Length: 219
Image (cartoon, rainbow, N blue to C red):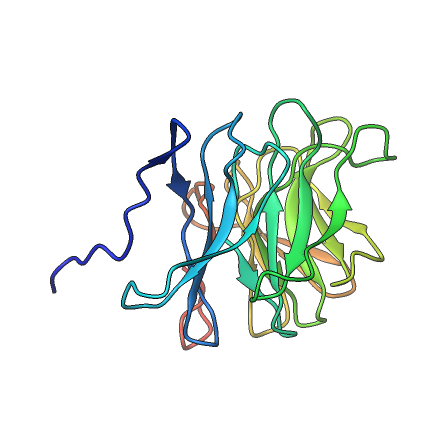
């Protein structure tokens, strides 16, 4: 098929606009975040039709953030995302927002000084079979962690701690949360926060995330 450009972001305020991978939501629209680098004041949430029409800026982020991993759509219809702040001023956050741009709320701030978890979140998030939001970050000693929280930000918990980097997460239909650690270990976290590690006949490299096939296999 032919490649079709739906929207060219170009520059604004002297900054190159860098959109993340858009989310195809259940309402048929595409949602994403465009960020313009570490010091840009022009980071915004947008939506656009799949034919490239109807582009709208739904929300402008007021803090300076470097990266926005792709959004996810929760079972409640809200959008959930991460602002990863790899330099001053301020910590990374997990947020949610309605698809019309209202109701923006910070669910969790990874601020220095909070016991056991202050480092940057990475993404994207996933929703588990228990309705909780799962993501990847790091603890106070910079060890990678998988964390879990309710959709209102409550009950924040560390689901697992690892000795090396962790891939993006995959929520499987079997109820488990799967990922790959940097040293090639495949792991599964269940809703009771039990962790299973699997050895494989080949070395697995850390990737953005696993894909679940229609037969339930992961690749």
